[in-house]
Length: 114
Length: 114
Image 1: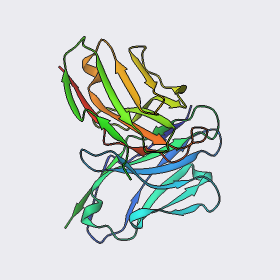
Image 2 (image 1 turned 90 degrees about the vertical axis):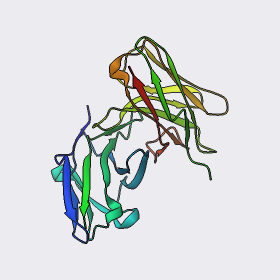
Image 3 (image 1 turned 60 degrees about the horizontal axis):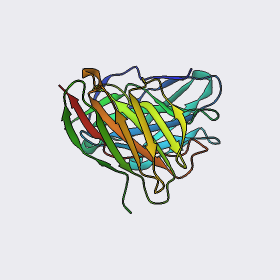
Image 4 (image 1 turned 135 degrees about the vertical axis):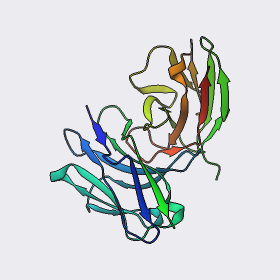
C-alpha cells in the first residue's frame, strides 16, 4: 500500500526567507507525485505535479519540487516566501496503475512572519 | 469557467440521520472523486466515478454510497451518521478517468454531526 509522510506538522518562516517542505513516500514503483495547497476554509489547489521526465518540476506561485527516487522524496521549495503563502500544504501520491486515487500526507501548516 | 461546485457548503446533522452532498464537475470533466478530510488530517479517498460507473472505493463502511448522473454530477450519501463523520467532504473532477490526471477540487461541504 502506498503512503505519504510529511514530517513537519508546522513550520514558521520569515517573509522573504527560503522554504523547504519535506515529503517522503512509500510505493513499490515510481508514483505520480503532487503538491496541493489549502487556504483556510478552501478546497485544494494544485501547485505542481511529477509524472515523468525532468525530476525538477516547476509549479505555480514560484514553487518547485524535486523528485529523488533514491530517497523516495518529493520536497517542495520556494526561494522567497510571501505572506500570502501562509496555508496548509499537502503532498500526495497516485498509482500509475490500478485504483485511481490519491493518497495524501497529513499536511504541513506554514506560518509566515512579517 | 466555472470550477467544481459543491452544495451545501455547511450543514449540521445529528447522530443517526442521513445526509446527501452534491457535486457538479467542471464542464467537460467525466470523472468525479470524493474525499473526506477530518480536521488536522489530509484528505482520504472515498469514491471515484467515471462515466457513471464506480472506478474505485476507499476504506469506508457501507454507510457511505455515491452515484454519478448522466450529466456527470454526483451525490455522496452517508447513512446512520456518527460523530466521527464530522469532516470536510471534498469533491474533485478530472476530464480523464483512466489516468491519475490533475484533480480539480471544490471548496467542500463541511458536515458537523452532533
